Amino acid sequence: MRPTVGIICEYDPFHSGHARQFALVRQALPDARIVCVMSGCFTQRGMPALFSPAFRAQAALRAGADAVLELPCVFAVREAENFALGGVSLLNTLGFITHLSFGLEADALPRLQAAAALLEDPDIIFTLALHASLAKGMPFVKAQADATAAALAVRGDAGASPDTIKRLLSQPNNILGVCYLRALMRLHSPIEPLPVIREGGYHEKTLDADGYPSASAVRGAFLAGNLSAAENACGYSLADKPCHRPESLDAALLYRLRGMSSAELRALPDCSEGLEGRVQKAAHLAVSRTDLLSRLKTRRYAYARLNRLATHALLGVTADLLNAHPVPEYTRLLGFREDSRDILTGFKQSRIPVIAKAADGDAHNPLFALDERAYDLWALGAGLPAGMMYRNKMIKI
Image: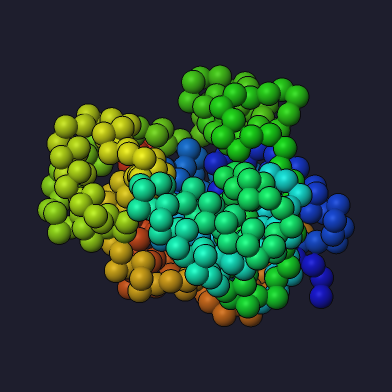
């Protein structure tokens, strides 16, 4: 079977570091095809993407991706575990993906696999340590990392000190990498991990002309008006493209939250333990999304979790909806390369529909209806009319 590498991504926006990943994949597997599963209008950190899915998919295809599929919004705006599970499940259902490529901060795949195996089958040491840390008000990600390090130290599985494991599990790419490995284990997938070592900081805020950028730094440069620096990092023009600035939906968000009852707030994902009361109070005082989050932020509640909660409120996503749809039920084909047209035959064998035209989607599926709302909200913030999902044509390079 010809190697076909899946990459779960956001490309917000696509930049030279992402192109480097393509090059490293083809260095390891020279004949490989690359299929990207990309977030749509909203991202895993809970914010709207800066540029449209079509524009970001086009950039990936021009850089050498063979096809770009869209990760349904319900999985794109999730914490790392379910973001990863959604993407890996989608790739797994295609039936012809041989490898999954993802970035790591260090060459530590065996240690991260040991951590993933523990998290999929936690023992009593892990469970007690996790509960003790959470009882002290520790953020979940740190509590989980500390508990994993403690349990692996007793087992001797990781071949590293607890401090080394804690450090590995505190780094963003490694956290997501463990979630990809867990998803592969949970799904009993034959897909093989193909990690690449990242160069440059995941959350680096400034652009370094001598290194690979972070998407955060590219967005920051673009939003600050430093177009030439952002374009240099991306390698293509960003001028005069529809964009959604982070603050564009602030008024709509506050209006939505101020009108929600306590019961409606409690129905949101991860809005528990009295958080609904804090949200209600903060929404009536806040004058922007940033102000809202600063009023809600505590040691227990990370900004990303609160950002996702805000976006879930805007989109009408409930915990019941997430529970009822644990894995993707379809995907949309955003584009492909003409010289890789044979990949379309593979998509026809997929165990879930690969939708080439939005009008062919199931409008009665609540996940598809959510995607439509996400596109319309993104368009509203970008100053565009509704119906963008249906107007965008599939991209062919």
